[in-house]
Length: 468
Ligand code: FAD
Image (tube, rainbow, N blue to C red):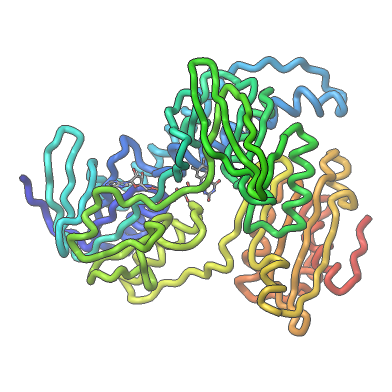
């Protein structure tokens, strides 16, 4: 067993939490190592999450547009799907991104220690390489950034052949005739969209009586209507009880949550997408006395765990399971270690669904404000009244701004429509500066752009929307 030099910080996990922490540590002059067992850096996000899913969403959106919308613009084409090439371009882009992290590690003098990390008592991380060789790293600080894995469901065994999780759904060998998605959350709807656009019939089975819990209810309703128009079928309030796979397909059984007879669905693939759970297998938490909570999350207070010198960030701790949240955690945690202070405003972590239309929001929903008993005013602006959206034939959706009734401070912004993922950041900045809706309403926006809808919705809070 080899012993190595002492590190200021050893980070276990090379996803958005871990790699951003490692790079920030290098920038701040800390001697840092990042332990990652996967063959590439970037974690779930770069390898089997955000990036490959967005590659397929982009390609499949263009394919569907070529088949449906191009003709309206006077472009007549007959698109032909080359699924192999679509998958290859996805893999090529992912490869470039993961190599980019390796480059940043070198640039910031971060050591990538390849292998599975295990905490072996205070200040010690044991790394087992693929060939079985074990190295012990000495660490003044250990940061746990081991992320998450797909949640499982009794009676539904993922075989990555017929019954797949999100990783399998990113690499299906053919377009399903009928894809059954268990779970109407963001991941299920994004991946369902990919295959729907490529020609699959898609049925979504969801336990709750609504889609996308956590999303503003008015937006979620509009979103469901839009997906239904695109051909999605929804079975809401339906509890999946089992899935049986054969060589040719899958039989799924479910029963109404409200009670009633069990029903079956036949599909050729099933995607299980009911959420993710923290991943801490074989991490040696017991060696430093850390006990995960009931759902498997590592309890923290400003990233400090119950063990001296051990910190945790990203999907493995409470909070939205999002790459940009993990990234914020990583930077703030390292700044806590290096400088004694670091900060993340969890109210300002935006959420996005990268479907068409896209959905994006930040801050409180109307339901949350009502529950808190906070008086608020709402301004709303539809994309049908936005000139750029109109000219581009992309008029679905709206922007809604919620502001405090007394102070006018912006409390939440909810948007569904074209390219709103690129627009929500404006409100993140405004809200970080605790802007009033009038601040946005009185800020000149370029014409003609979809971003004018952001301003018009803010103007709507005081009832002086103008654009038509
Ligand atoms: P992870 O990215 O999960 O990284 C953890 C890493 O730790 C992994 O690489 C793992 O191999 C490694 N590891 C674990 N244990 C050990 C160990 N003991 N030793 C060594 N290495 C270990 N989020 C967004 O913000 N936007 C999106 O569009 C988006 N799309 C998504 C689409 C899909 C299909 C999925 C599945 C997720 C998506 N997410 C998205 C969520 C996002 O991927 C995660 O929130 C993010 O990756 C969490 O980062 P993390 O660093 O906490 O963990």
